[in-house]
Image (cartoon, rainbow, N blue to C red; front, top):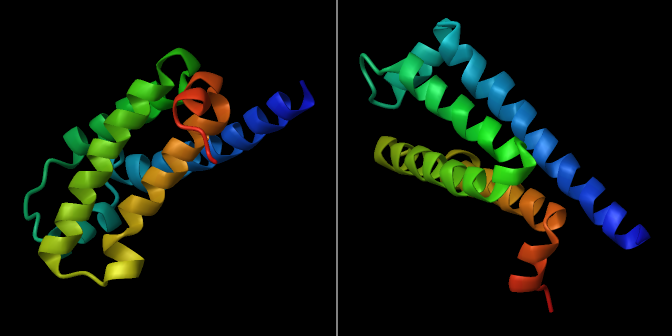
Length: 128
């Protein structure tokens, strides 16, 4: 029983960190129209990017991820968002480990959080 509680605590720590990062560092700058969001998108080749739409998609996916009954769907949706970020970074010629693979790191946090929080997923994908 203690092991299950510890695993859930680790899962929520990973999920909470990811959620806080997504909302604070990605969603809010886009939804509030901060210049850093627009400048970053322009530098990546997204002139006149739909910042509000991208921010709303990220927010919805993050909230679906953080809501326990829909966490797996949320992880799938966030994986798609991170895939788009990876493709954008690759197209822009960004550094591999610090920028391009950042979406992979975020995906590991997302799925790690779900894996620790969800006994059914641990049963399907056991670490041996």
